[in-house]
Amino acid sequence: MIRKATIKDSEILANIISKSFSNVAKRFSLTKENCPTHPSNCTTHWVESDIVRGVQYFILSVDGNPTGCVGLEIPNSEACYLERLSVLPELRGKGFGVFLVRYVLELAKTIKTPKVSIAIIDEQTELKEWYKYLGFNEIATKIFKHLPFQVCFMEFDFGKATNQPVVRGATIKNQITSKML
Image (cartoon, rainbow, N blue to C red; front, side, top):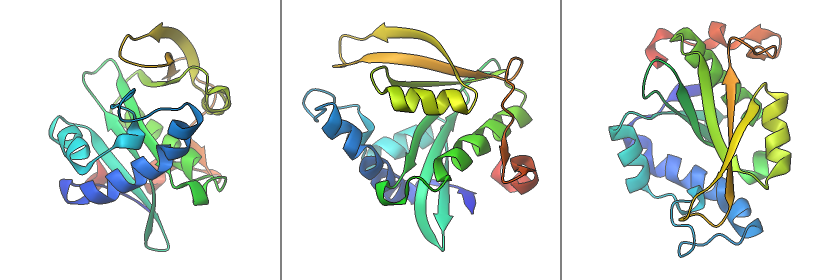
């Protein structure tokens, strides 16, 4: 089950996000000192600030337990951003990440935004391939002075996408209620 998170869920979200990104931080030697904005350092304050500025978070629960989350930021009608896709490490490989991404894609489609963008560590090639499988394309890479890695920008363009947001043979749209929008 996926539900829209509220500010009351900040602690749950921060816990899922920081745990989910801890292995990436370890792999790329990211610390609070050299990369304080990496999601492995997520706090409740961070999540609360996101929600206040308009990021919509969604929590995936399995058997009543929070398992993953994803954020969707809609700054304007031309694009939106998929953020903080997180699945607890011990529950990966079960399709939860795919379900969360496709859920957000369907939401974006219902608000008629033409594109959904993401930014990932460029060297994380397996993640890049996973997003390509879901219909995202690499757009650009950029080096930021404050980050110890190169960033890869990817986007899902609804006008060009051949990979439609479908999970288990049914569109996610059938599973979305107007309360979640």
